[in-house]
Length: 257
Picture 1 (cartoon, rainbow, N blue to C red):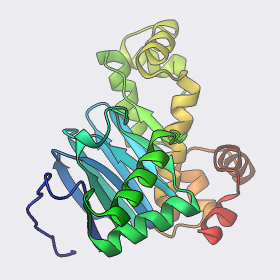
Picture 2 (spheres, rainbow, N blue to C red):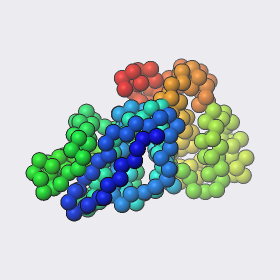
Picture 3 (cartoon, rainbow, N blue to C red):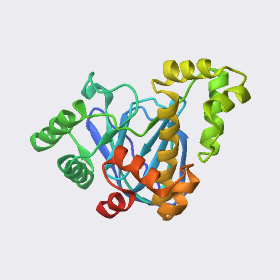
Picture 4 (cartoon, one colour):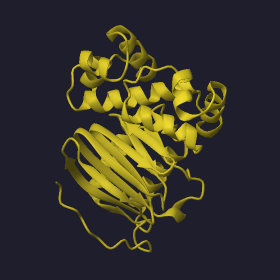
């Protein structure tokens, strides 16, 4: 378990702070907590799962997660994870996102994060630091959400189905069968998922499977095993779904990382 760094966050002197490189082992969980400042978390190795009361974000390699100030969240590591974190004073910008999201980390943003980690903190009163702060904000203002997001429904019936599928991603029962178990009609469940999560049931179910697949692959499980573990009938079907979401096959994706 990595050593925790404690420091007094002087928001009058420093507008951006960072943690030095932290290394976590597979399965490590940072328990639910919150911060009074915005947080940008980037893993240069491994896969993170960030959970909030509203949903979960699976953060693959080459992605980061934006966690707004005050958001209660936990982070679970899959595979060996190298973590870098930036903290931003909320008053830096009123237009930064007010909800968590997974973002792509461009080569330039990656180098910017690494440079800030080297400096430890940024003070707007120092011209060279101010330039880095505004460059960082420019990147954050245009950041795009990633596809691996699992918003949670609020209705008790839909929540029962969601809990079943999260616990057992390989579940193959149809939406009709699952709806009966939850005490609702198929049409009602489809409507609840669409209205409360913004995703159709089939898309939501695929997110569960691909998110779990990322965690298993990061931990070193072979593709054949992962495909079966997340409920795909064949390896080719799993690889096809993975490629459509991430632009690469599982092997290409992790080799590139």
